[in-house]
Image 1 (cartoon, one colour):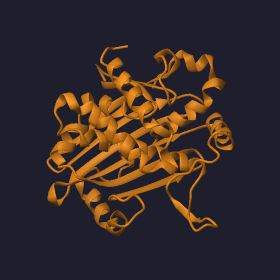
Image 2 (spheres, rainbow, N blue to C red; image 1 turned 90 degrees about the vertical axis):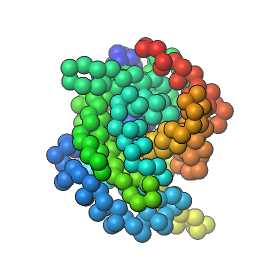
Image 3 (spheres, rainbow, N blue to C red; image 1 turned 30 degrees about the horizontal axis):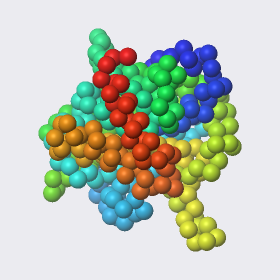
Image 4 (tube, rainbow, N blue to C red; image 1 turned 120 degrees about the horizontal axis):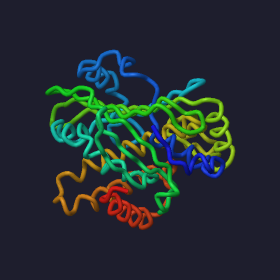
Length: 305
């Protein structure tokens, strides 16, 4: 993974943005070998295991979210039932050419371009603040895309990168899916990243300042008024951004049945509406600001920058 020289020249200025970006996109450190079995069998077993959580939860959809924290890395996971047939999900997500249209839906992704080299497909992504800005002022990162396996009832895809700013490393995004009955699909999405001392200190600074009042989705108890108390800290960061990523994927899939000329508008409308359902955790910008920004960014990324 390579970042633009802008970060090297202005590390302090970019620290808060870096922390948000890490939570949003960087995924880590577990190698493919960490997966006990890459096939539909364990994924279907997980669907059975999570039956109660998928049918009765705070999300008002068939979704289970979890996060873990260790002394050197963070991980977020979502298991979800998608109301789209496996064939459509496979075509959409098991193809690097489609991923830039997914990624650009995220609030902090300002540009994405897929290219090929001898090693495979690379996604060049500019990540920045939650408003329109020149690409020169945003981080430029490169993610290696790998199609791991495709069978009639299963596929797995990985995006990874080795190193990042502030001692972060071993980024990993993992997506796998298998068909269910009634034309639905069971999706598992994972991301995590590892960090060193600089990254830990930067995260602590963020959580003591602009991230102090932000929360995730795990319920840790009740507030005095009876409302749920949600997890905070680094796991809150991971959970918020795991959900953002999932909602971008879902919005992309939701628009596939629309005429091609209408798909962009349907994607960005769907993504904002879904995100705002979880306003306590995810509300950052107003609707019109998001829609206008994403229309401009989509047009910009039609030309290799």
